[in-house]
Image (cartoon, rainbow, N blue to C red; front, side):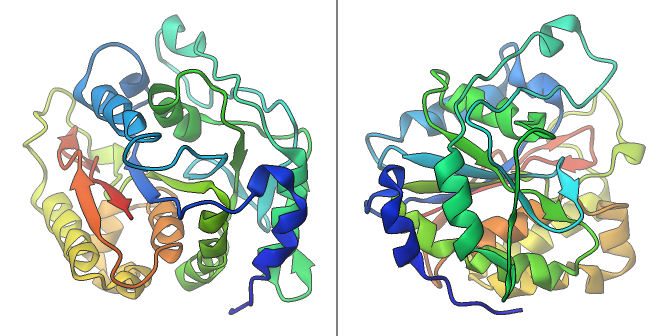
Length: 284
């Protein structure tokens, strides 16, 4: 699955004018509760957001790939006013009251759908009503960009496709970075809710969770991004880290949009509940 991305087609979209290359982010989002109150993760997202406009250019558009939008085929949110989705249960009312009224960008979604293809002759789908911004997106973007004045588009994931297909599609996103687009993958490098131990300290993790996190972290530090596609070859270790792997896939979208040997840094390298890695990455 390899395509050529004609970035020139985006020139007709005024909101995607040429700019300095944007960084790429992979954010471990963990519990939705991280989005409210005073906690180390919310503070780290706030600090990262403060780097835009100083260390990094300010985004013209954000394309977020969240672990929580799984579809048949690939889709982009194409509405001008995406709704805030509270796709969880059993949490305090304060969390359900959270809103992130960032605009969408229908014109940009249509343009991106034509240049990022799921097959050579098939553009991405454009969703006009079914989805919006789920908590994998708004829980991290709201602390980073609290004014909600940067347009946001979500890109769904076709869970039926092999990891290498996700990585290949993500490689088509690279050119968007030259158009002021911030690519954000939101998931977790380790995510096993069945094994969570509530009250575990951030420094505590199961041996298998720590091993998987360190293995993937090693690939990232070495710049061996293509190796990330082969996580299932780790066998039982991978199955323990991801009984289902929708939270891992956003890492492939972030890594696929990165150029070889781009500088990177980690942050939030702790765990939640012993079985959720919050390790996050900034490239560029």
